[in-house]
Length: 274
Image (cartoon, rainbow, N blue to C red; front, side, top):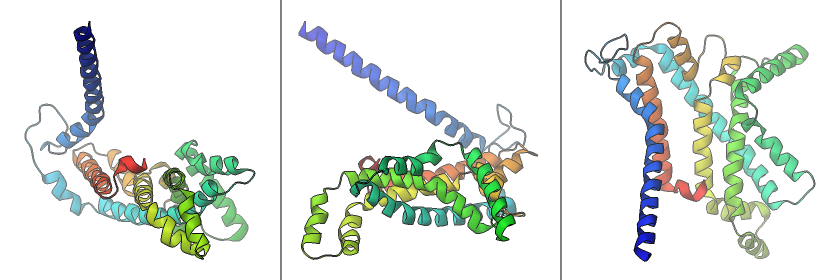
């Protein structure tokens, strides 16, 4: 009877492990397919390929739309991440440490961009910016501040989620002990709170950067004339061609994001903050 139970448990663990690995394989299959396609030598995608080549990677340097799009996406993502963290950190401290009416409503408001489709946010912001231009003559639509501000809305929910999770796990007695020794509130935050939640800060910065860098919908509405982000450049390229260049660009994006995830996991351990 005991031997039968052990056999049943072993079979259950094997079935569970097989299901997990099958799930991972299903998720990785599209990425591996894109990686494979990026090395095809023929311009028209067909199976089996005529051969393999690195020319799609080397030709990216000469394609200004991708180079310029990468530069603009990187600039906007860095700025949006910095501003998003600057806004989300005090908001998270208030939400976790504060006790006031409307706290849940404020949290739901800050997390709303995760619920509303990005295309709806982009259209709404475009109309809102146009109305501001009409009323004040301040050009926001098609401007860098308008685009960065829109991307900040995308970063705030991720920063709030990760920072609040870290603050909830932080013992308030540590901060109270520092305050009881005469430290002012801002000193407690800078010298005690931030060093203790820095893994959450790094994880929040990484996820905010990824969300902003890969956004397409909001950028379509708010990007300045004559400029383009990398996702828009990819979309525009696909309107006219379907060669492995897009697979090469996508592979580089995956490698960039993957390197960031690995580096973050090595520094702080993603399992601790997610």
